[in-house]
Length: 112
Image (cartoon, rainbow, N blue to C red):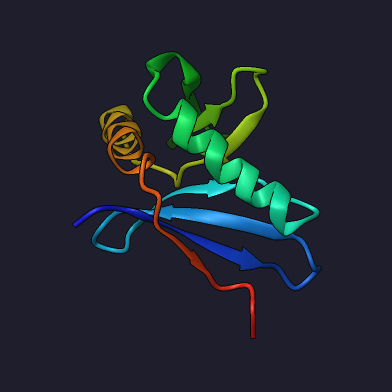
């Protein structure tokens, strides 16, 4: 089953999206956007950047857990992963984004 995007509206009125694997597990969460169209542009940016290994950066959080960010070609962060116990988990997460990020399915949950 292919991955998909969920487009959501936060309580503060800003928009964000999550990229989910086909099993429904979240693999990438976006930054906050001031408009729905900006969030949709963010999804398009994930779709165009997720196939390039150089756009991913694995990092270590303050608590020692690994995570990664996906950056656009202008070096802005598009999204961030969950926290992983190991660097290999981080690598697996990046591979999942490479596989699922090209999805064109967007579930718009911003209404109601």
